[in-house]
Image 1 (cartoon, rainbow, N blue to C red):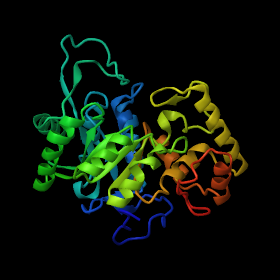
Image 2: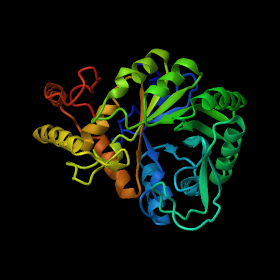
Image 3: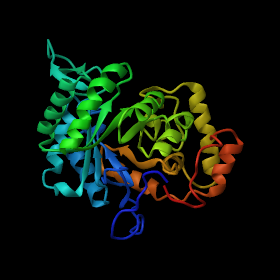
Image 4: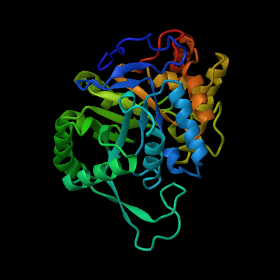
Length: 353
């Protein structure tokens, strides 16, 4: 299986019951990733305020459970997520965790500096985002992230959503990131996107190490099987799955009519499809979130799954889902009803998330 290496020493992953011990390493880079990672968009007040106490509780719960991969970005709360995560990790041994952040959105002073952010985060609009995938933009963004995080190096750096910036990202950002990797300022780099077509192009044409794929390979949709995932497996490029619940669509036993999908209200036909998936899950005594988390990790190119959380209770809920036993017959029923691609790898019978 491409990129999958059992962690060195200690009990086997899952032996302690938490399923978060090192299970994979970034191919060719030796960076060990735990089976679950903590996404920290909520630390940046995604949709609503997250208190300092809630963020601290989420980080503590993740750390206590053995999670050692943490992901953030300047985009998340106009730098708030990075500042909070840096503060919360200050007392943790630096060599015991892996941290990823992103470049591509510079934060610059807002002309008026009034009102709230308009891109989904409950923070003051004192700064604004400017897309920049140039060499200078990458270096400046990294320098500013290091200051916010209070660190001197980043383990993994992603190009964040370069959908409309292929030329600049591939010709300017990638060479700069290769240089930073060679210098040891970053350990590895890749792209983080909500599509699979362009990441596949990065895999074919650029010297990247991994892809963070958000929302395009989930229990609700498997389009990445058509391009990115087989290519990544062939080339030995690691895949980090984010958006496993498709912005909330798969986060409940059954989605409501107001369920979110790709950060917008889910279309009726999409909600109806998930209700059909829920019918199958109920027949086997498991939930949609249980099955969603189990499914994505079965693909051999997938190294880890990053799941966001606002509180310690949410972290514990995600951990409980990761331990769910999913009967093998469930996958066959989903396929038979046309609810799951027949080409999608699935866990072995009774395998946990």
